[in-house]
Length: 135
Image (cartoon, one colour):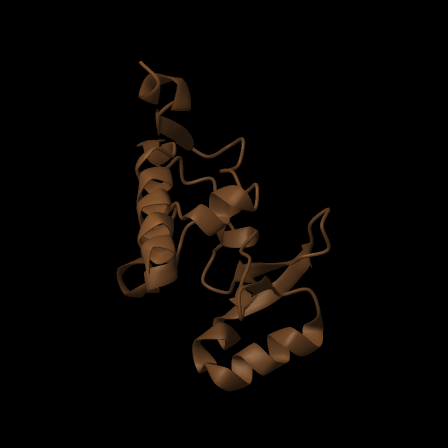
């Protein structure tokens, strides 16, 4: 019992004293986020066409995307079919929640090493550096 209490306290102290991240900037409308999308199944990035086919069977909204290549880690990159030749969304008012939330920062994204694109106006920055917790 005492061990569980100690582990819970340790967990919350670590959670409290972890660097947090925030988004700064604004959209430059470069379209890179619409051409380099990654998806996950069961906390794993999609790496094969078969996984993508399974994902489309699970949820039809994924039929709105085409495979656009692979990144250096072998993760499939997807392009939204609504992107026009000027990198503008043809369905902007009706875009998915995935698109509306970009760039939403989660621990999974940060620990996976994901960043915004060089052409993107958004930047992921630390809200509070770890050293500031020690003062």
